[in-house]
Amino acid sequence: MTRVFISYRRDDSADVTGRIFDRLRAHFDKQVLFRDVDVIPFGSDFRQVIRKAVEDCQVLLAVIGPTCSTTRTTSSVWRSKPPSSGTSRSSRCW
Image (cartoon, rainbow, N blue to C red):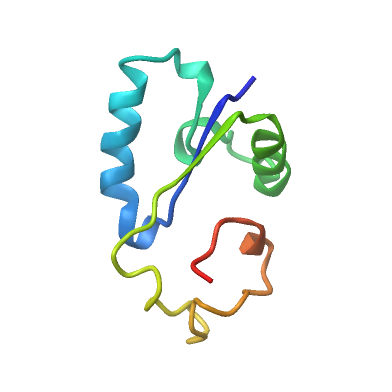
């Protein structure tokens, strides 16, 4: 049922994404919007939930923060290289 999928990095764009989400929620029903902190139930396989939401969306809104291209992952690998974790399926800055 998800129509608008909001993709963002918590490290540098969670605050502005929250404001965007609030503005969209004023115009659309909450079931139409997908933002991970609002939709994914505890204990769910987040990869499956996100994959399904992306497959079902009509709009994918990627919020790219100011440090996206210069941020390193926890393993000190530049973010511009594909990470090998399960989160590699999400939007990246490369």
